[in-house]
Image (cartoon, rainbow, N blue to C red; front, side, top):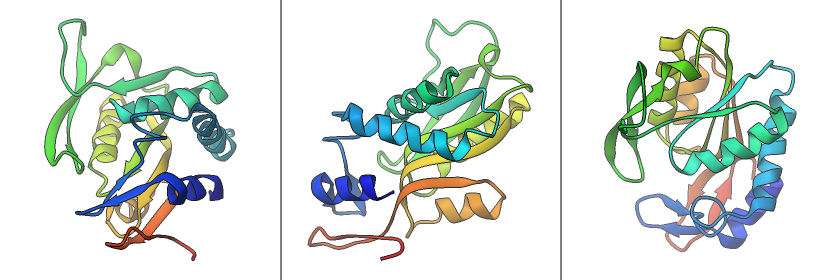
Length: 192
């Protein structure tokens, strides 16, 4: 979506290793007006899908999930990166790999928050190689919940995550798809 592409061009920073920093408006400091537009865009795409839960992985996806959930009027559930002492009862678990931090996490979600009756919209700030989404899909499969769509703010189109998910039949909606980033800080989006 043009509003997000424009903001990335204005305030995003390209760093070595194909890192795109958007921490001044999306995932460290958050522009709530922009976040509301993101939530509305996901709602417009999936409003007829019967969504009952918005799901993400902690931490950067939580604000995005909340913005979308406001429009859908449904709860947010998020997979925690560590099983804390205050998670009671049985949990679903899956291993996810963070591209940004280059490490694996075992994520957990209490079983009482997701079940076979749920129709889920998965959301996150970035999609690179797709490991976080694969972990969330794994949790949904364990719960027998239906994944109705995947909403991504920024997809790195030059990495395989989006293609992998689409090839497996998932409807992926990425608001901005970066096709290329140059060493001098230029960002090119799909369709340009």
